Image (tube, rainbow, N blue to C red; front, side):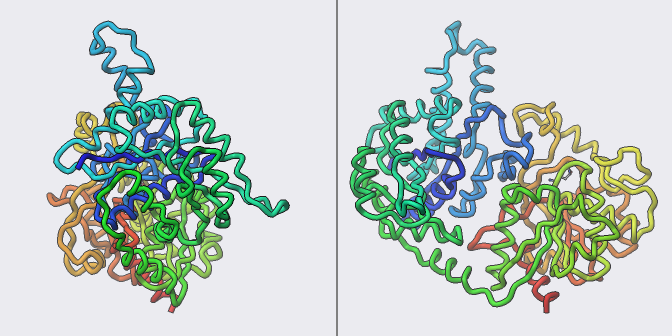
Length: 546
Ligand code: GLN
């Protein structure tokens, strides 16, 4: 079978949950025995979100192959349980980058390079690349970022308009997600924004086949008929995406609406009946928590929850696995110091210090780690969180003076975290891993790396296997010159690169649960397959809560 394409556009306003809707539809089609992939096309000019501030764009999701991508790819992996790659996300910046490179090479043979056809052809090639190779999926869902009507989105919309005639009507489906607000004062749903949004889409030549209406309450039948009439879609092609408490309920809600069935019929997909048992079990398990633990997340980007999306989800998965509700208390590390740390962390059953960049807030994180270490509160340090744990231990347990990371003070006496020159040289030369080797992101260790696990440690208790692969996104590393000194004071190095060159996990065996890892385990946690380190951290927090 040839790959069928589903294009998902959004109207009226952003943040309607296009990513979740695409992922949920994909998950439903999977339960019908189809193989599915999803691609996100982002209209912004950044080549990738790697250089963007998490305050603006939310989390940067890292794939196994080292791509820095949009956080929607995290949803795709969590719902589809298949790894994404750099193929699954592109931006206007990346498209233009490649068009301009071709122009400089003379590939266009002297022609005038234009948005149509050169930019649109490039976009089409990126979309069609999903169907290449032996493992071409049955269905590729393409999510167009932004809102219909945005200037920068036009080339993408033009590309999908053309693809429909290139590939044939039976092979492409357009789904438009809009908002149908409920006006409490009038006591009714309003369809006008949807009508306007579809009009906008029609003006660029795209007729939606299905309208998905994000709404607070389910939409009555007569209103669906009205939307169908004004937007030229089948009467049974207007669906409600009603607000839910738990995002993992969305696939089941869509199924109740008959959404995936309509998609299967319109695309003539060889779909069997949906098998929803796993999703039903997940939703039941989510609702089945006995106790509750409070976890302090001590970080810098606490105002914007999106900045820690995967982390938040991984903690939830761990809560479900331990049948306990996880109450996340976001603590701004810039406000924490040695004097107030006890009151900042009061009532918390676990302390988590997530990844981050730059010195701001670091001393607050170190104070929180000291508190957790001394008071026996379960601690989990991720990337920068692990680096801070090493600094804290070197300062307060090993008694070293003037300890820091090279990132924060390159002139300090003891750089326990530093830029490893072998790596640095390797990375700057290794241009294939990124488009540009000399830019800020080009020097990072990105993507999946193997890590061997030392037996008899907390890490091995969690993983239960000797070798794992985890995803990285950082520039600095543990400085092996301090291994002996810190080991002498009781720190163990329970995860190492297979050739022992890099420290990947540190822990304190004398503490109930104190683990730091150089990688980002949150990227690999799935609702139906929780990451073992998160599972054990929450288990320890539950024990601590008593
Ligand atoms: N800033 C640190 C580094 O670059 C940690 C990065 C992170 O936490 N992702 O090594």
